[in-house]
Image 1 (cartoon, rainbow over the protein chains, first blue to last red):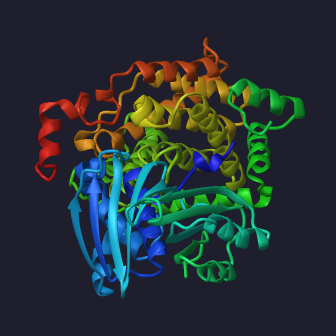
Image 2 (image 1 turned 180 degrees about the vertical axis):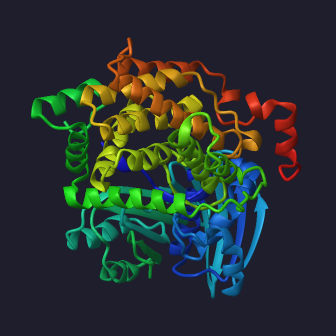
Image 3 (image 1 turned 30 degrees about the vertical axis):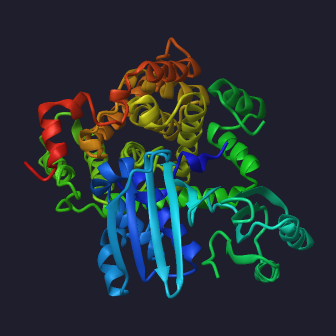
Length: 222
Length: 291
């Protein structure tokens, strides 16, 4: 029994899926980028595209990209706030055929860093990231999460998980996807404990690892 | 025993330990979420505060992005203030409060989803004005929110709280059942009377379809918060009078799911049929800004 699934979230209306969840999609994109985007292209799919305007979905996503939470009363004014911060953002629509009807595909960039995030908002303000930089993934960002992008090389999975085990961190979920044999691979690891910075450093040093992102709930990622 | 999926189990759990219903809900929630009673109560107290703040922050000039919602809470307030309203000041205030909160939600103000954003007006419209009328302390109102959450949780487990799955009966119907039980607690009813009030409230709203114009949480959602609140009051009154639902709560909730499963998809948040499918509904959905 979790009564906070029934009472709450405290949120800015009008819709938990189209507004609160949309803020969270913007937020997780910002966290995956590792800071405030300078540019963002936001593509809305399905019900987000057809009823998003009236639900404030575009403003909600931009609010999340600016680091606001679902209960932030500045959400209705997020476009002005983002422009004041010098963020360039554009909107469009896309037809993501296999995705949940409430989905968005966001490409965000700062400096030389770019991320492409596909995420959906199935209801109650919860979200699911289903695509990261063109590779299929599945995580919510509610648990401490480590994302490792690398070349697909024999033995790298055990080397990465070895670093985590050595820190006494328990993994609750592990998923590995790759483009093709020997091509780009992505590993998403959800953990029971906060992931310290030194884990990121140690994994980054493993041969073939290109990029390590850690998401600790309640912290901006670095 | 932290996951209860029936009202009869919850009543049994509370009865065996001689606990008021709210306390049983709090205990079970803390056990399953590994949370202290103190932090749980602080979160619930915060929700009461947010409900109060949204209600008192209502601005009758605010309009939704579509232009379909706004101002009705103010019209109702004026009418009640004129002293002419038929059902008296308390019922008038309940109607006004439900409109205010529904409009706050449509206008992107901060609200507490209970159980959903579209149905967020029902519970505060009942507990805030009735709390004032009954001189209820904040502690009693927080307890009432636990009762409401317990009822909502059981309905979510047995049936659904999503309009897309089971129609508006799952949103406004659930909110009304939650509010009826909460009010019964505030008025000093027994655990059984709280469960019974929830059953009566849900029965009255079985079959309610989800037919939002343009697919937006505005028409008829804002005003359906009013029927959810008013229905909660009449059902709490019946239960406190000793009137029983002939069908027990769990079977009523199962019936809600059954009705929801048989309901056409066109009437489950797709914006196709019902009010959304009317000539006016279609016109507004193409160009919502049009009068």
